[in-house]
Length: 286
Image 1 (spheres, rainbow, N blue to C red):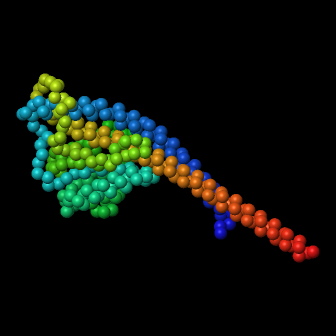
Image 2: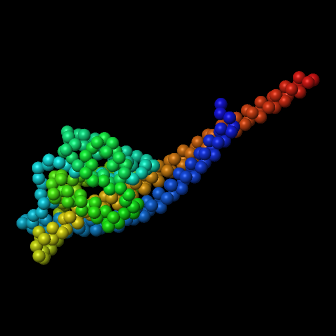
Image 3: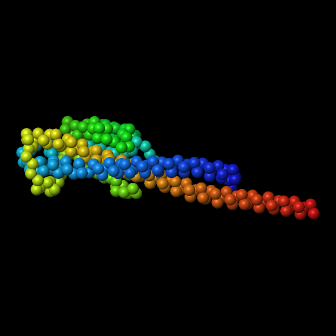
């Protein structure tokens, strides 16, 4: 049985750990609040640019752009959004497991796919397994601006245009609520599934031409999809971190209660033993 000093030492160390996890929970909660607002604020822009792009692409039969055209798939690109650190519950493991299984299912050789890893955890996971990482991005802020990811999105869309891959998928955790996040797969390129139903009653006049407008709008739309997913993923990351730290704090409190009970029982047993020895000693003197 552990000594009173050992039990007290464990209680003190667990209390210190609970203070750290509680502080991390509060920090994550504050970050989540802002990240959720950022993700929701970006949705109207995404909806509107999709509406405009879909309307132009559907209304102009002569409009052509490489991003709208499907081509034989020789290589597939994957954008995988993870965190730069751990302590975020199943946030990283769930997304990496989904991507890894999908790549193993779809491809026989690492030359058949290319990975763009956003986040250190994902990068380390793929590099450790010698998978084909063509671009890695680390150290993004907790509340990224469009300027922070402009280079990433430009490179990602540019790789499709220059033929590095023939289709591009994105994997991230979609934020549902503070306690629920869903692993999501979204096809970014080519843009063959634009929903034009919402824009069917809209009419636009093009100046100078639909092709010229699509030349500018389509890359922006693809970039907005990536940025929107990144905002969504950041909200999920902070939510998962908050939940994980809350669970750790609750477990620490339960452990403290259990250790305190053990400490009191051990102390009571020690006191009882001392009393018994005293009584025995007095009886022996008589």
